[in-house]
Structures are given as C-alpha cells and as structure tokens.
Length: 107
Length: 122
Image (cartoon, rainbow over all chains, first blue to last red; front, side):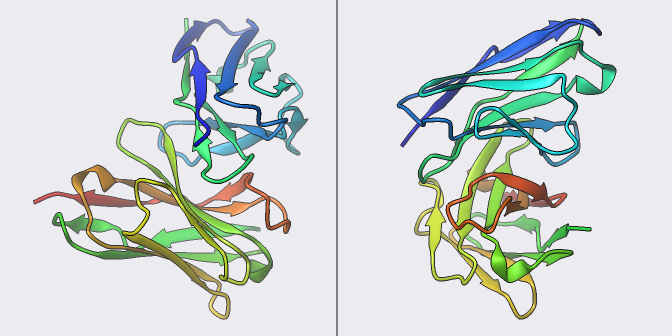
C-alpha cells in the first residue's frame, strides 16, 4: 500500500502569515494528491485536487504543488477561518490513504 | 444542492453487526462512485470502502476487508455499509462521500455527509 506522510503534525501561525504543509508519498503517485480542510465538528472540504488544481470556490491564497513523491500545500496571508486541520490524500491506486493531518493553530 | 445524509449509527457490542445508510440527493446518484470514510474520535481520516456507479465494483481498506460490505440501491438513491464482526477499533464517525466526477477512477471526494457515529463497546 502507498503511505502518505504529512508534516508537521501541528503548526502555530498568526493571521497574515504564510504557511507550508508537506506530504510525502512512499512511492511515486504522479500528481494524484488531494488536500482537504476540516474544521471541528464538520466534514472535510476538498481544497485542491490533482496536486495543484484549486477547487471552485476555494480562495486563491491556497495553492498546491508537487509531483512524484513530494507535495506541498501553501496558504498565504492566513485568515482567521483558515485555522483548521489539513489532510493530504493520495488517489493514485487503491487502497486510498490519507496523511495523518496537520493542525493549524493560531499563535 | 447536493446532500448526503447518513443514518444507522449507534452503540453496538463487540462482535455485533450494524448497517449504515446514506441518502443522496441533488445529483445524478447512479452516475457517481460513492465512498465511506471514517474518523475515530480525535484521530485522522481513514478511507473504508468505495463502490462503482452500478455497484459492480467494490474496494475495501485492509482493516475492514472481509468484515464490511458496501452496496447501493440506485433506485432509492441510497448507499449502504454492512458492518459485521465489529471491534472496538471500528468506533468512529462514518462519513459517506461522493466522488467529484463521473469518471469511475475518480478518488477525489467533493461532497460529504455530516457523519453517523458508531460506538463499539460492551
């Protein structure tokens, strides 16, 4: 099975900061990597598909990049509503796996 | 508006069975791959199972293979998850999720329900 390892597991930042979250796959998954945001008590929300395609309605301060085994999610100019937990997920082959999550907290 | 509404969760003893349902609306239910994803309390997301649009193709995560069965009734716009031989480690909030496109290989989940809680405990 393909494993995806996310880092860091938690992150503190201030409104206006820029942050980067990393996801590494155990083997090449081309660009089959998605990013989700989850707020407490809510279902996850798809932000970015296929490594870098922003889902409709998602603010442009979110961006994704990478291919092969290494991927990043960058949030520029953090807003109060961005403080949440972020998950990467590979969609290359079955079984699908998620990263462990990155909790983004307000400093 | 796309809606997915799960039901059927509850408290069940280890070794027991439970059947979850997910009612879909606001989209062409029979054209999309559907999925179950779970989240143990305070933990991350774990993909559980997926089913193709006609129900003829199914996939399972390693931790549930042989114990859980995913199915669908397209005439009733409903997705199911039959869970047998339940264990304490199956305790989780179970979400149903719709794949983003009608491509049967699509594993991006664009709409999710709010989840139904399954607690396995004696």
